[in-house]
Length: 205
Image 1 (tube, rainbow, N blue to C red):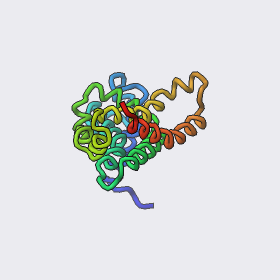
Image 2: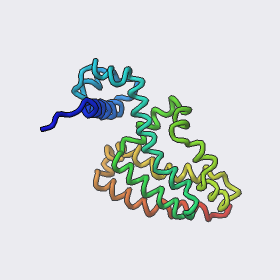
Image 3: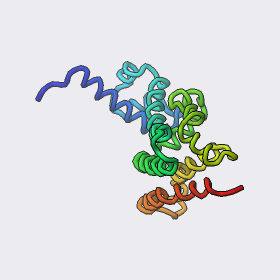
Image 4: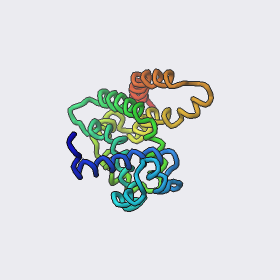
């Protein structure tokens, strides 16, 4: 069996540390997490962890950027695609977003709870200011409903997708859903949410 190169060993160790950090930061949050917790979870000694990432702050920054880009990377390419009709964009955003969150249900709570502490970094990392101000999606909504701030529709769209995942532990504890029922509901919402948003866009005030 061929020996691993130093670069391969470094990458393997870094990935173990990052995977452990994702788990511990999600369970404990930034403030309650110690680098020793991450080292123990990863099975890598504390000195080696500090060699790769220097500090808890740097490691957390790496994990946050990954999670933020994963969470919002679904929306921005679709929102800025000028070849897509508004209705198609909404359907694609909803479907892709729900699929992502079914695969990574911890993303919304982790990201939003930590983003509150550093919103400027969030804007810089996701280019969310461009999404909110200049995207093709916003312009299409403005054209469709010029008398209503398009943020109302964006807030409603994202809220209808994201909130069930944030509230899932409560729904589960109350005996309202299990994993199978929740996934079925989310798949149904892929169809329902675009219809609800379309109705909002067509209502006359």
